[in-house]
Length: 500
Image (tube, rainbow, N blue to C red; front, top):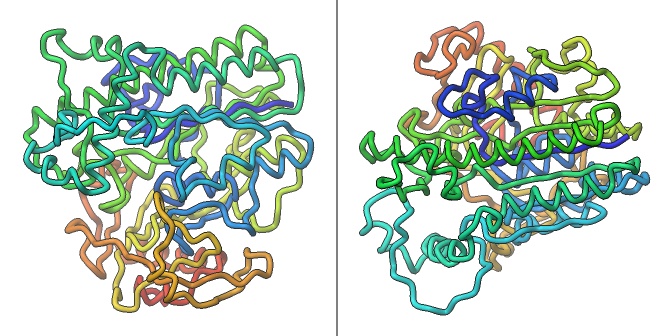
């Protein structure tokens, strides 16, 4: 048996044609839906990028115990488990977070890996030339951007400008290189058995830097917008700017669609549908002005972020063109792949294999939680979503870890001076861990400290009308507490969110 995963970053469910999207033609995503089972109730769990990938490996929520970080020494890693059972695993990606301090333990878990550089502000292309102090692609006032050029964020913008100088042709773009390498692996290995290939692109994550041929589909040749990099902030721009940035995202999405089509072509050309699993997924979505926000992480995880597209073809079942309503999450993908290859699922993986869902829509859970460390904590049953903001922020939260890094840096000496030992937790294999005070997120005005929001996302998918349904809220809150207990959540988490 063989398996291919095509993973995108920040892929919006409601933009895809089989989920009702009509803003841009995406023939290959439409074709994908015809060849796979489509999940209509797929949700994130841990947010954002690397926390989502940690649960892709470990099959369990991880945002309750630490923020962005590497795989821990005690973590079960699905690709490594496959590798240790004789299944060749390969990662081809352009996701630059894999080669930063906070992601450096993920890619070595595969048999082999390749990382294409140049996405976002990846410190890749070298240039000592003085910067102009302003990135024209960033949404916002030029003065605001110019004033932050000496900050890490400013250096990210400057580096991105240097990287773009090397991306003059479509084939120069990291996404194009990543899919080319993935297709090359498929062609060279389609006659062999027992391998798993993960083709993972950072697109359509911001900045929405699409090749010109895709911009030409949506913009007048004489008025192509340069604005393609929204801030993680409230929308302060006029509607015409929001519309231009949205078109940039759609152009990049069209690029993603063409890349997907090349994978489907290889499945057709080599008759891989008879023996090769195909999973197409994402880590989370993205806000493009909805709820008056850009991006993610700074606000409650609205449906545009939390409700994700997921497609799976299981060659053993040969079911295509059908929808599934059962509630599934990212934590289910690791058990699904292990079960497919006949490998035992570790007891610490709380996700479930989706074989039964694919076959008969048999549920694997009644409730699921999602969120980011110290941010809004949400629980859903697929119909209702209850969002809970922190209540007691004085006590704070901690990072429980043996890997003392943040996204792009090591934890500081001052942070580590405050560390103590804690645990072990149920999933740390008997290891005690460092307990380090965490920097907690600021709450947005959408959900002030101590407040809750309840939505019926079946009737109100855009979450415009909060409900006053005490019965549904109480039921979801009770389920949330049970899930926290199942995950051996830290004791202070309950008081932090006002839970009993």
